[in-house]
Structure formats: C-alpha cells, structure tokens
Image (spheres, one colour):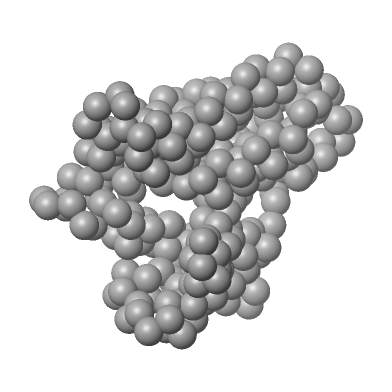
Length: 240
C-alpha cells in the first residue's frame, strides 16, 4: 500500500468511527431518557464529532495533496461535521441534524454513487449506515459508560434490555442491506476469496459474526467484555 493509500485508510477510519459513534450517542441518549430515566446514560458527542471532523478534513487534505479533486458530497459531509461540532461546543444543542446529514452523506460519497442507476444503491447504503450506527455505534458508546452499580446492577441491566430490543432490529436491517449491496458486486461465491473486495467482505463478515457471539456473552455476563467488543467494532470499521 502506498503512503497515500495508507493515509486515506486512516483518515476514513477516523471519520467513520466518529460518525458511527455519534449515531450511537444519539441512540443511547434516547434510550436513557425513557422512563424511568437513566441520567447517567448521557454520553458526550463532542469527542465523536471531533474525530469525524478531523478525519474528514484529513481525508480532503490527503486527496488535494495527491492531486485529486474532492467530491461535492465529501465537502458537504465535512462542512456538516464542522457545523455539528461547532454547535456542540458552543450552544450545546442542535448538533444532531447536521451530524445525521454528515452520516447520510457517506452514502452519496461511497461506491453506491458509482452504480447506475445509483438511487437504489445510495438509499440502501444510507439505511445501512444508520442501522449500523444504531447497533455497532451503540455498542461502541456503551463500552465507555459506567452505570452506578455496574452493568449487573439494576440501572445497567435496564439499559441493556432497552438497547437489546433496538439492537436486534438494527442488526437485522444492517445485515439485510449489507447483503443487498454485496450482491451488486459479488456475482458468484468464489468472488469471496478470489477478489480483493470479496476478501475484505469476508473479513468484515467474520468480524460481525464474532461481534454477535460476544454480544451474547455481554447480555449473559453484564457487559463484562464490553471494551473488547468496542475494539472489535473499530476493527470492523477499518475493514469497511
């Protein structure tokens, strides 16, 4: 891999992790606000938005220095990340719409935009990003939280039960949209090990399967492996 290619991977990973984490923060906050309210479950979104913005700016800078013209979708995405971060740091509210716009712009700036016709693929990608943010982003954010009596306490179990219902549906949607997008590129089973896209897709899918298995342990043992699962989320994002 060239130096430019490595830089693109790093900046994209940072931006993706930031946006997925941002969606996870919104989900966790909404779940925490349900009665009875879990006031400890109000994670900050500043760090995630900062990561997304720094990653986005770094990616645009790398593309520019490499002689590539940034796409309109890429510029709009970074501007939206900057606006969301600015609102979060100043007035402390109103960041969510801009943050979700940035997340949705990932679909407009990805491979889906190169498919003809692109509308269906972009819509599928957008749903995939939001559902992945709900499920994987929620796991990532929860791995940094500390309930008053631990995850085996009443507050921790309440949050896990709430998130579990949402995560199950979000994972199903993520898996379905992921399969739909993969069928547009993988035409036969051998492509999974004979093409670069197939190999990366296989690695990503393996990571997701391991995440599901770890989630089962988490629900049984009170988030004992939460941080390890959070690290796995970041590795799957790297494959993405």
